[in-house]
Length: 544
Image (cartoon, rainbow, N blue to C red):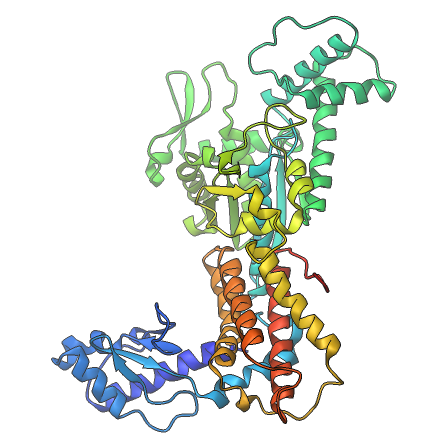
């Protein structure tokens, strides 16, 4: 069922279209745009139809808008529009129409905000996929929060979403991890390492792994390959545990080592070669990705016969495509910008439409304390881990701050602000609105079954009603645009509207049935706050 807000948009658009055609002004149905105003004070919804009709009607937009407004009939959704801004039509929704959203929210409860926009299509969302050669860092935390929230949003919008983590447990990085383990074991045997080889991980966490290796009764000396595999699996398990603590659960952990051992890499090379997209030049084998719009062709097999990193990546995406998903979404770090063109080319070379794959970049995070960047970790000596951040500020503030900016925008994470327990902290501000409503409900008598939402006519009440009505479309749009940051923005506005309503109006002791109507409105606001925070993976405390 369409949301009340979307139904209002469509019914106003249909009425405008009918009036325009009655005046002999022909315009396509999809050209009638009705949307929220860009600035407050311009009604609940606005339309620029008069500007679109100017060429057809051969009249100024202002005159066209006045004609449309004068011919607006008695309508159940909206009053006749006001004409403003040289021809904009500003609509105010009727209270009876808008107030009915309270009952809709309370009837649907935690399902409110769902839609069928995804039509049950299957999507595979791959995110984080950090190398299992060290602890998860802050940037991985941002990718985790964004990916998990995007999956929840898409599920609310009617998609079937699976979450996948690609484990890079093969290749040179695992060899270097094994070398680091061997050197740390050497140190533990009393033989200091004078110089660490370039590219070998010197982090203190490797010493911790080496100590664990010995504590489990393993030999003080072992093959580098065995050490690397063991350490990578331990770190992968720790990453999984940390992500679970952060509220992120995957449907599948996909092993690169298993992919290589299955012959998938040879298979994708053969497929590309047979299709004519892999050619030999100067002893190397090149993928002709420029045919599909990439900025240059890509080496897949070097002249010495070894593979580039793109080969297992190509095999992995071929595997994902073969599983029959309607959509693949990769969330990659900023160092993967160059992968966009080659991956899009690969999808098409394998015989799939370009839009089967979406690649989104999640930008870096800079931690700030006292206005200054935080560069060093207390434990690791090289980087700030996700675990350290969560220990310091908590899961809820971390997820909120990671989500409040568009994923492709670099983020400054204010540690001082995240630890505040005041309304200056946006997550506290929203959670406090929910806790305040819960306190009201605890103080209220048994809820009255008799109330009229039509009594909710005060500006602060109408602002809340409009927010409730808009929520399903906010969820759908955030899923559609892959924009989880729409949620914290909306919830902050809704919480602000409720705090203002609470300060200015009596609720429990309002006269007559108005008390029941206002309490019902508060309950509906709580439903939406709980749903919105739940989609973000953030808790809703009973008391604060």
